[in-house]
Length: 227
Image (tube, rainbow, N blue to C red; front, side, top):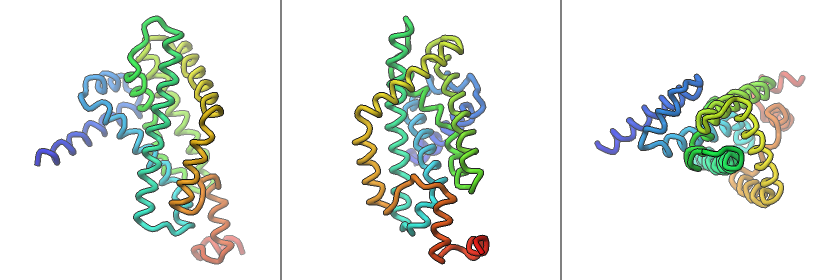
């Protein structure tokens, strides 16, 4: 019973963190900082964001008739990959902050704050909507960027423009790191992905639905749309 109670307590705290993040509520940072399970709460937010984003791209899995076990594994894999990518992203911002500001917070605190900015991507499954999906994806990314700026402002105790500079330089550093050492990692990720589902995620929802319809295997509604 104790384990079950701890689990439901964790879910309650996680939902509270997500609510604070989505509404840009300044109580978010104090709430996370004071919570003994802060790292697990942030990991939960990032994991859900990654899994939901993949769910929004699940038409790829549908077209490839991925079995239930592999589908769940794919969701988990994408969630873990999001956690890793945001650990690196947070480390880059923390590194930039150490050069720009005299009294930056601890590395772990910055990484947690960056992880919270993924909260809007919990709605990533909406990118599955044909034609509207890319627009929804941009809205979610802008939303997350605003949370990130707010988090950096709070964490470093700086103004908006300083936070924007810190985030921008961190992004450039992340881009340089990706070009230097990221390609082999991305190649390994894509190879693993193809091994799991037999395809990649670089096609749009519309392209995949059209490809599926051309095979004569799409739902009747889709096939009628092409006649």
